[in-house]
Amino acid sequence: MHARVTHSKGDPAKADEAIRMIKETVIPNAKKLAGFKGGYWLFDRKNGVGLGVTLFESEAAVQASEEAAKKLREGAAATGVVQITGVERYEVIAQA
Image 1 (tube, rainbow, N blue to C red):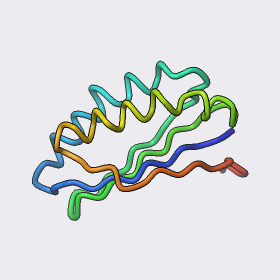
Image 2: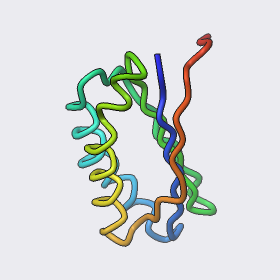
Image 3: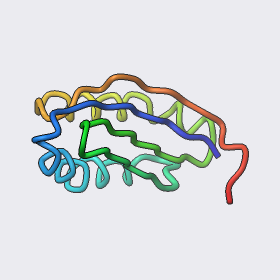
């Protein structure tokens, strides 16, 4: 399994708006990506920092989803609610 970790930052005053966007737009579109196995979206309301961890069945699936994921990130950033501050990819080596 492989993961993409997306870092974001936003105005804490817009936390509810950011969470709504994730639930109504980001997650439904992420579920449509080939090889998608699940995800976790974490948010610190106090300082507006967020992490999205999306899981894929293989490294090839992560790579194949890059363009679609980039468009999702660009769409989220275009709302002005969040700013994407980084994206990383990892191999999942253990799970508990």
